Amino acid sequence: MPSKKKYRWLKRCIIFIVIIFILAILFFNSLIISPPKVPNIKQFKSEKINDSLTICAPSWLKHNSYNLWELYIEGNPYERGVKTGLLTKQLIEEQEKAFVAQILKMVPSKAYLSFLKYIVAFFNRNIDKYIPLENSQEIYGISQYSSEKYSFIGPAYSRILNYHAAHDIGHALITYHIVGCTSFAVKNNMSADSSLLIARNFDFYVGDEFAQNKIVEFVKPDSGYKFMFITWGGMVGACSGMNEKGITVTINAGTSEIPYSVATPISIVVRNILQYAKNINEAQQIASKFKTFVSESILVGSAIDNDAVIIEKTPTKQFEYKSKTNYIICTNHFQSDSLKAKKNNIENMLNSSSLYRYFRVKELLLKYNVISPNTAAKILRNREGLNNKDIGMGNEKSINQLIAHHSIIFQPQKLKVYVSTSPYQLGSYLVYDLNKIFSDTFNIKNTKTVYNVNEIIKADSFLYSTNYKKFKYYKICKEYIVLYTNNKSFGEISNDKIEQFKNSNPNYYYTWQIVGDYYKSRKQFKKAANCYRNALTLEISTLTDKKNIEENIMECNKK
Image (tube, rainbow, N blue to C red; front, side, top):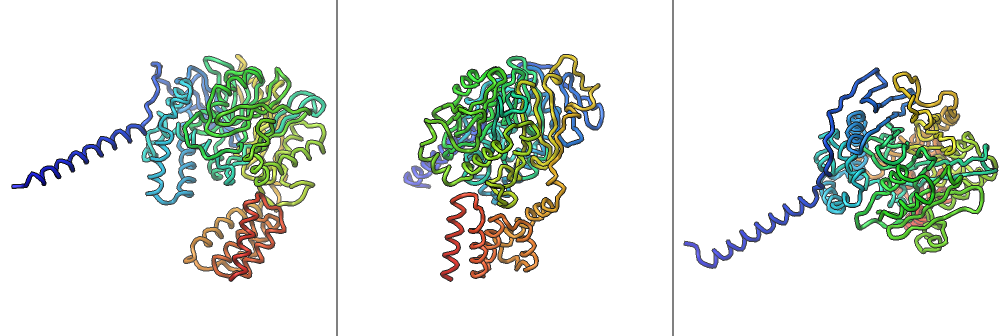
């Protein structure tokens, strides 16, 4: 018969196990975000009219010949979500597939990925409290059409909420070369027709596949203003858009610390400005209501004010920067008196490509002097450095880094928007007239093209050049060399392959850095040092990269 001592020990073990079990239940329950309450709505059905058009009356989805998806949605928040999910179900799945594939590429360990899943879920466990009910209801409607393939990440509603937060975390990682957007606005004598013009590159890169299915979405909500924005499957937040009052909003990542507390994703803030602001003052008031994850520069243009300002928003404060000239430029550093002298902003300007791109945009604006949509597209597509220096294809110091998810040009007074087609901003820009699309007489069944056929900005000639073919080869070969560098068991790369790679993008410092890293991994230190020295003669994107190359040279010289 067991002793009393053993009984006490057994009792303690049982109590301990019960406590752990209860804590586990409480922890995992805390990770599950409950969906919002939604109104009862009728059952919606979609009708496929032809290979390019599907209707869920009066909403619709059209796939145009330039591979842009055009989506029109109306109704209350939950209806909009359900209709969006119904019409874009395949696009939501493809977008999630691309996003998850990129995550798996960055974090190949399934065990570590599972660990991160719970960390992120715990971090974002209260995110629904920071998202307006209207947006939560729309997200919930969309989530009902999400694929079950990714349920290992979490329930559909929680996943889509967390994806909105992931976008902000990506912006916080500007230091790590995930984002580096460029935008500008001109007015009065610097604009070809004297009216306000805004242009931007959205350089948010999570793989080429992520940018394959861009959606130009037009929304007629049951409250607020009609608006359009560029989006992707499952995304309710906005990064670039314009409303029927001529308010335009674009966002550029600012200098941020890695966020350690949950808040409102910046894309949700932008979405609310688009839906509820008619002028700059109202945009500022709406932005000030939200606590955000990260620091961001929000370029707001206004047809009513015939002006554009930058709202500089940090997780705790908000300021305005207003230009004294007829142009305003926004890259990735702060310009307001309150933030420009801050230590982390100065460090960002010194270390990153932001200031360089700012001066390159300024150089081109002053060169062209009068900016039309066609001229704006030329600036957004520009790949050279200051004084037209060849700094290599894909350099972060270029306005066109050849990574853009989308590029966009707005004419707020005319309610016209020019949207780039793939790849990057090299394809044609299609023109959408909000007056036409939001008119009561617009009928998608009787409309051959939603965009204006006679106002297309032609594709960049670079797209058909030998250099572009070289760039595509460079991208493929770069991945190949990095793979071999990290896996010595793969063997050696032939000298011919190395030379072909160098010649594909010889004026880009990173080409030489990659080859140097490969030689260093194979203990060919003299060759590695020569490559690193070549890299130092070229335009290097960041001070961090320059220091890294210099340290590698010192290491090689010691061998």
